[in-house]
Every structure is written in structure tokens, then in C-alpha cells.
Image 1 (cartoon, one colour):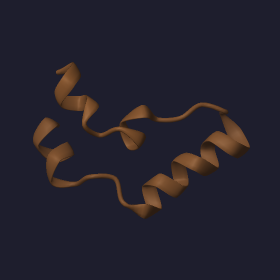
Image 2: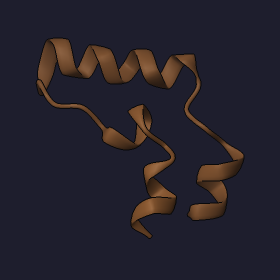
Image 3: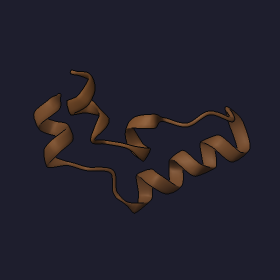
Length: 43
């Protein structure tokens, strides 16, 4: 999963989806879309 995270960073569609989910539904964000570099810092 770490390799996949590095090879496929969040694109504009995923970032917009994260925004929509935050604004309309769950009112929380996926931090790994906002900060993909955290994967390496955590694992």
C-alpha cells in the first residue's frame, strides 16, 4: 500500500470528492487525501 500511495497520489477528482464528502455528508476529511506524505511519517 505504501508503494501504491507513492505511485498514485491524489488527483483533482479525489481532492474534490474529499471536499464534497466533508461539505455535504460526513463533515470530516480523509487526511491521506489532504496529506499523502503522512503515510511515510506514520508507517
